[in-house]
Image 1: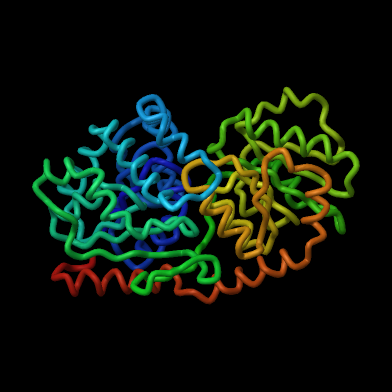
Image 2 (image 1 turned 90 degrees about the vertical axis):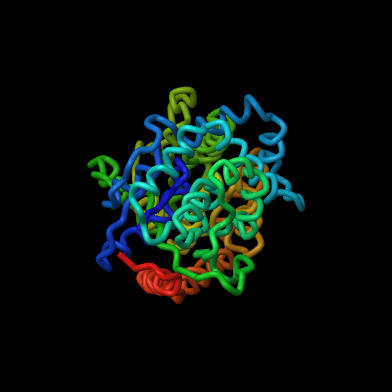
Length: 390
């Protein structure tokens, strides 16, 4: 089986649990990606680098130079009826600017000859490759960010790629959706799968371990993390507001924000600690509140830890959809960055209704089919399409 993943951590981590389950079931799995997509290797899944040195951030930067209008629409934190189409335009545009990566992905599929391709949403070369090989293409959704119409969008917006390879959309397709039913509309023919948060592997530094296990009893802990998505200047403003609010609060704060220059903040209050790298699930498991940038991994990590969350509305690819889902279900709040301060922090820390909602969704997720259950459905799909599962 071949997994094809866009070169971004947010695209990669949702596919890790299925990669584990496939290998545990005895299937031979290869990941075709580059940059952060190769983080699947940390999880123990074999990878091939189709474009050494390339990342999704670089692709977005190149697109911003060529199509600033599309980036401006993506960064609008207000949802509009054409938002899904805007995402499709952005991805198709970014892929057009990386033809070598696209062709390398298709070539890898032709060389590997898999029985099925499981791919991250909006990755057009996966659809082209599956059509050329006559095998099923299975989309592994991010969760909370819906891309239901993406095959049609990518066929329409990336038509020259399909035509260059003499194919149309694959005949057999399926969708794996990790969205909790109470946080979004689940398409009737989607395969539901429980989300299992993964935020990277490696050795936990001793100072990070010491801090994580040293949670003071009765003192709330606020975890602050912004991934690599929003611009550092924007996240720095929010961090500065949090640091300013900290001295007057009966809480401790941990900043896991490596893309923020903490030196500019000056001496930190006694109840503020900075960490370099640390697995978010470990950090969240000992926290009371999470402030993050709106990535699906961070949102699911908070939910699976039973925590309320605050998302500053930085905008960006898919984040308005996540903010809408989080706020709509009552498991967190999406607010303008300038509103993140003491009043808001104390209000959310005291909000038992929000914490209860997060715990309810956690139990909902635990009741969904496991990745191992989905592996069985993949095998049935291959057999029914005339292939073999291997």
